[in-house]
Amino acid sequence: MNEEKNPVSAETETIDPAMFEPLDDSEKNAEFIAVESRTFMRDAWNSFKKNKLALVSLFFLIFMILMAIFVPIISPFTYDGQDMSIANQNPTWTHPFGTDKFGRDILVRVMYGARISLSVGFAAAGICMVIGIIYGGIAGYVGGRLDMIMMRVVDILYAVPNLLYTILIMLVFGSNMFSVLLGVCISSWIGMARLVRTQVMSLKEQEFSLAALVLGASKQRILFKHLIVNSIGPIIVSLTMMVPSAIFRESFLGFVGIGISAPMSSWGTLANEARNMIYTYPIQLVWPVGAICLTMLALNFLGDGLGEALDPKKR
Amino acid sequence: MSDKVILSVEHLKTYFDVTPGMFSKKKIVKAVDDVSFDVYEGETFGLVGESGCGKSSLGRTLVKIYEPVEGKITFDGSDISKLKGKELAGFRKEMQMIFQDPYASLDPRMTVGEIVKEPMDIHNLYATEEEKRDKVVELIKTVGLKPDHIRRYPHEFSGGQRQRIGIARTLALNPKFIVCDEPISALDVSIQAQIINLLEKIQRERGISYLFIAHDLSMVKHISDRIGVMYMGHMVECGSSDEVYRNPHHPYTKALLSAIPIPDPDVAKKRTRIMLQGEIPSPINPPVCCPFCTRCQYATDRCRKEMPQMKQVENSQVACFLYE
Image (tube, rainbow over all chains, first blue to last red):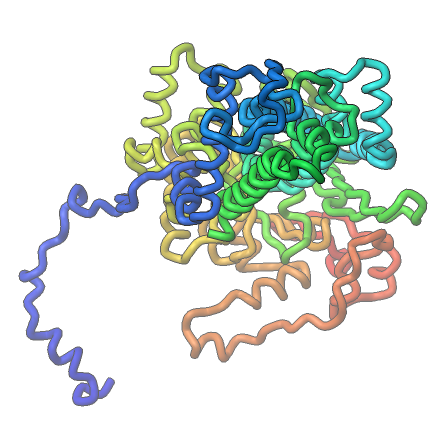
């Protein structure tokens, strides 16, 4: 090798090896991880916080839920207390949303409707989630012939119009909360089942699920402790999208007159009552419709925000 | 390494049905076709071959991820190919697997401690949670990680660290046999050496046998006592590591070995590389003939009509008509 063209090797000779001291093993610390340990949910919350629209929606929904719980308790008026002397009032300080044709306080009625609409929405979404996860999880994990049969059953259920089921259920069980829930749930779980099935099908081929199999984990353990837990992101997103659609379905049933029956109120039945007064007192329609619109909008923004926060690829 | 055979595979066949619809003609992929070999206690059996030749399918069949269509797997004296239920769960403790991709083989929603503890939970190995925790810490230390890592999640670790977590999980059951399915192919070269040294250390300390699947031929030579060469689901040559490398018989083994990169360019220039001509046949519904006949320069009419069987040639076993 040419010495003159390589000044580095000339210089290295002047450095005395005694100047170097080997590092003690305890000082190496090669396995140290500097980053603070964060769980998946902490990470998701941090990125969710950055989405202002979703954050505002979340606070709006919390506010709505609190109002729905407390307004009918605190307010001196009841949802069915009639007082014909103050019928069809415009908004005043005593009745911030005004009164309806029977002199009932609209604020209390809207908040009472919020109780029904929101609980139908969340309960329906919860029931659909449980059924969808179990059904879709089993179909996706077992696969083969069972999957084929289970999915064809779902296809058949999906092919019949929802309204038909709902009207039949209302005819048999009457117009109450139970039949509204049943009517909303009977076909909404299908979307969740399909989503969970595809998630489970792709995750079960991943090595961590094979590893659990080789370790001797039972089928239930692999499905519920590994596969479902890992598809929780899309499940939550689809859940937040399912709540508004359930609320909307319930409102629709109320509006066409086959939902919750009077004097109880949901947003749909309130809108239906107000529709009759649309030429004389249009303000009465604004409140239930506004409540439906804002809640749906908030839930959709929340779903979008969660979708972004829970999807590691979009962060 | 002893003379006791711990795993004996006889005429193992793993087929996959890839028929696209209900009414199409049946399409079968013969991933593993009539493979036989023995693994001795405490040794490392290397399995090499190109991508898609059935190495991983063979490994996965051994740990019962896939069901064999035919053939017998004898592990520690008992036939495991038809095991079901409780007996299968018992066998799982004895034979474990290390996976290829350290980024996919750990559940991202579990902490390292939970991952290493899971096998103990499944098999109820220890009576109390404290014992389990102590054991987890001990295993974590064995693979060179720190005890305070057990509360972290897999995504916080590097590839090599994750692979070591995978090894710790495997060791939690104290297996006698580990199938290593390309455990180093997803890692950097410097980290590869770390993992290989760890695997060798564990083997020395615990006397575990390995089936080491890889396509890095020099690494396989380094770690293996004996080697099997696979091609299109068949085993074409099998012998001791030195014998196969120094004196290859099968034309495919020769071509494979001539492709090992040599770090010295002067030596590399002098070497003649065997360039294979011809097409790899489709693995769907293959004809009965030597699987290598389409690319073999010595192929005769007999090779295209008959399937060669494994025969003893010098110190190796070779499936080729050239040596008859």
